[in-house]
Length: 550
Image: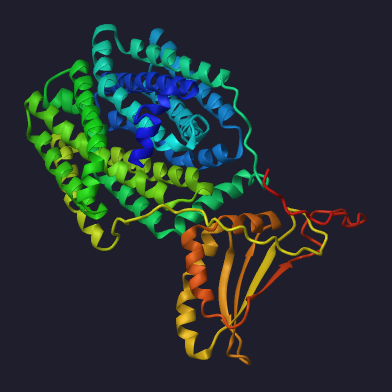
């Protein structure tokens, strides 16, 4: 991969492509504006109420829509024109930023309106992010896609390094309205870039899934994928316990260090610089430590640093500790993102990443509420220290839910033969019942049974339902695997979703089969009720043609 990167021009090769360069530059500006607005919103709430729990709610208002909408947004990005989705999302974000600007300019800003418009911006972010991430592969050749993904991550952290500090200074000099206005302006370059992008429509073998079913498919994949499920759980818990720094940063600046908006922005800037440092160090650290080892070390270092922040009354020391916290949190998030990407086949990567985003943001959103109440009742220092100490108790989770060591889940690379169809059905016909008959030497019955148990999560996460395995009482050699799919198109999708690891598991089970091939039977359930016809109209469904790749 390193040689390929060198031949393609290294890390910055994607910037040679005009479209990617425009999108990347626009994303830096929009991230910069978003982070400046975050500073303005948090400081505005601090001045409006002075209450720790209300200040923490600013974080919650921004991240809660991402928690609720990430999976639907991922499904939308997979099913509709990503350019149009991105434009709609940017319009929502621009509306939220413009609304904040206007109500502040006319001295109408209240805590409720502040939270409302932050929620509006968060909603746009939730819709925009999956479409933006999924479109990277359309902006650069596949050979340099890893570098493009890395550059997109760097763009946010570059903005996070300087945006908060600039935001703090801007708020201190020109007031919070300037932060809101600048954010609204910062969305315009990305809007223009997306508007003038002449995107080529993607061609698919099968029609896209309906939105509801696409969301369900993504959730089922996550729930039946142990590596992703483990990463989801660990990030959720770590986020809930360790979210105090971002939620309470304005109060750290005001209560622990006696500063104002400028110091608040500087603290966030040092946190962002730490994130860039973490992005640089993730590669060398992964070569030396296991994923679980990295998680344990990161939790230990973050927890210790947060206790140090709680005890520090010196801005320089707090800034240094925030660099460490930012670096370690970046390593934790990168660890989760890499695990998700390596564990997910292409057909569900967007939804799997959306699920990861949901888990991470849910942890921050709910954790921010909790630590805000702790700070309100017992003080900022106590909340920070308690959050840091709590991370030490997260480490033993690795004994039960160990961070997985995952490899790339390649597609199966095999062209499965098209099934025989002699019945007049359409892609919407269903449910489809599948039975596969195996013949196994009774001496190998237990080994075959254990091998087939690995097929249950595979069938479920690729789109099958109600999987079962039965043995014939009158013929001990005969075993029957059974599951169903909602429609014929869902069955065709299920066949295409097998990864190389899935095929290897199936081939291991097939090794116990006696004879040439297992008998596969595909049956249409409710054959006269699969499609809604009027009582006096006969079934005119044409014999289905198996879609071929374009």
